[in-house]
Image (tube, rainbow, N blue to C red; front, top):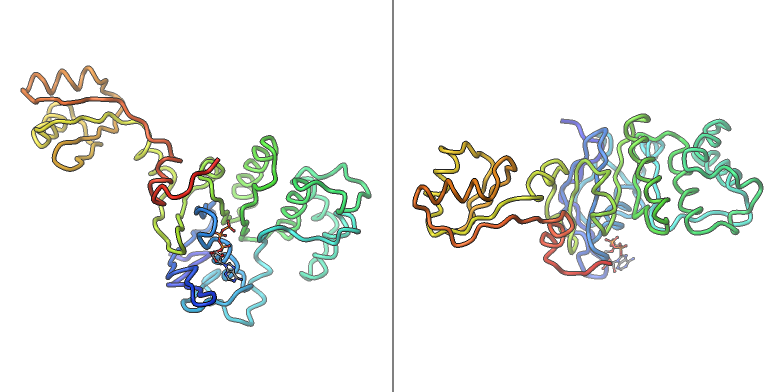
Length: 307
Ligand SMILES: Nc1ncnc2c1ncn2[C@@H]1O[C@H](COP(=O)(O)OP(=O)(O)OP(=O)(O)O)[C@@H](O)[C@H]1O
């Protein structure tokens, strides 16, 4: 499989402290990949290394199947990015800022600039200097700058910061559109699962510089949403009944005395009846729900609390 981004055992040490530790991750073409982790997890550092803004202390990075070297230039024409807070020439207009960026990238296309401004819904700004823009408007302009060259890969560091709820919704739609209609691959970081769970195809979790887990959102949804939890001293027998009498296949045995049934076609009453009729003692049988946010907090050790 060829990946758009591939990191192998990438680490970064700052002043003797390892802030990114042996991260190996792969991003497939055409995906929206959410890089999740609490503040300080190393997301920005990892993205900066992918963009050659920082040199890894050890490890290797490949972009578009090509090894990233200190002098690599050409591959960055295929990438758009927003890292940390986007900086502009404050006295210039949005259009002038984008024209300047186009010149710097060796790309000039008036139509592309107008299209990018339209895509981020930043059109009625006339001749306003960027210095007069709100934080949300600057975020949108940063996005217009990142997408105006129609890059194959878009790297966005916490892009939702500074957007209001309506802006967040529009922004999610834009990300989806860039992926489906413009065929871009996106890497988007966030410290909140709720911000990107609706758009990401895959999430990778970073905690304390370490890559903890990678999971597809589809798997996550089917694994970690509603289930019925059965507590019984006869766990193995109960599993046998579920499987052979009721035809339940999606369940998990947890320890010696707990089962979780992830199939919704059986009600609590039906499961209780089937088990009791087979002389299985039931200590508890309850419907449970794990939110994806709870799952994320469990993964990162319940460390930080987020608003
Ligand atoms: N230039 C630097 N010198 C020393 N330490 C740094 C430097 N830049 C980042 N760090 C440290 O590296 C760790 C990871 O920071 P990084 O900004 O990559 O995390 P993050 O996951 O992006 O978090 P945030 O969302 O808060 O930006 C932090 O502990 C940070 O203090």
